[in-house]
Length: 303
Ligand code: SF4
Image (cartoon, rainbow, N blue to C red; front, top):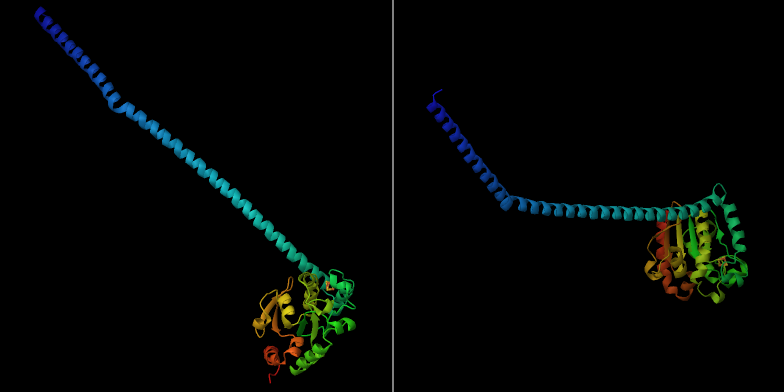
């Protein structure tokens, strides 16, 4: 290789080297510029954005946790409510079943006469309310224990208290006439009262007295199992149907009665009490209208 060629070659080499050096310099510049550019435009913003994203993520996580807790709390409340409802439902069911079982167990397979006689003995010894202290006799009820039609009054008067039988005074005689006018015999129906002992001075029975006594009547109804019931007067209607609606508004309209443990709806016709008719004879026409509704329903000829 000639010296000239060698110098040129070296010059070329050095030249390239310079160029490379120059490029290195430029690359450093570019690197610095890039770092500055990244720093000024990118990194801090990205970092801040990352921080913001982290904050948002934490906030979202926190919200999700709150929602989860709320759902858990709601579920617990719901579970508690369901538990309470189930408990109440069970309690009511057990009470009704106990009442039903009591009534059915005592009556199942036992002839109605025996059930009623056992009930009569129970009532003869009853002292659940104050009326027990002034009675001469209990007035249990009387009539056909297989009757389709049951009459219910409010309670015994003086004559009934003495005899121990329902509706034997003047009002009772009028009731007998009403029954005969319907085309049936007195022996074909059953007659009972809301309370079995006479209230002093023929006053109306008090709420607590009827509350103590009415389960006896319910058992009589369940045992005799009539299809139709006629309530006589406001007191009998009020306590049998558990209503405060007046007799003048209820009379002449069929009502429905259901008893705990008895899978039957009794049809009830409220009408005026015979004692009221003795004082207000002009009301007899309404009672006759009510009795005719019952006759029609029973398939008896309506005159
Ligand atoms: S009225 Fe009824 S509850 Fe009261 S003592 Fe007579 S039977 Fe018992």
